[in-house]
Image 1 (cartoon, rainbow, N blue to C red):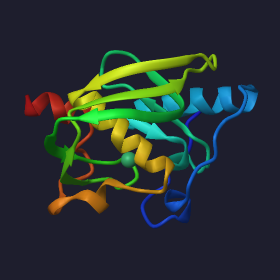
Image 2 (image 1 turned 180 degrees about the vertical axis):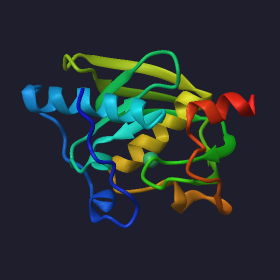
Image 3 (image 1 turned 90 degrees about the horizontal axis):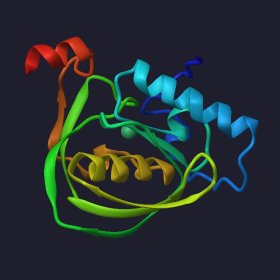
Image 4 (image 1 turned 60 degrees about the vertical axis):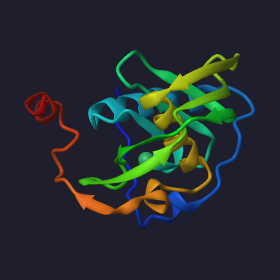
Length: 165
Ligand code: ZN
């Protein structure tokens, strides 16, 4: 298990457009493992490679039903609308209300470089849209309605969430 440092808003790596991955190798395989470890350690539901300082089109997502590894992901279709709070591991302690598509179809390569087409709804669709934005140097704050709110640094801590429920 290896944790990588999560880059925070203000660092230029979060504003750049990422390059595609053309082949799987030890470097990218290790990066993917480290991204998953880093996401779980931080209690996040998604992490994009630029958030750990790597300008490649790789994201990992886990909304609670197992990990998705998406390489060179592209949204083919989106429809519907959902409005809800969103946060980002690169902007700790903050949330904002963002409207996203409620349903997306995303095409990507998995960690074996096999093509996958996935239909995602609700939270998974939100996570896909949020993480794919990172690959083009965008963050959710650009889309926030009504301002960013301070929720404290323990917002994503599991114990805190259990207390909330
Ligand atoms: Zn983010």
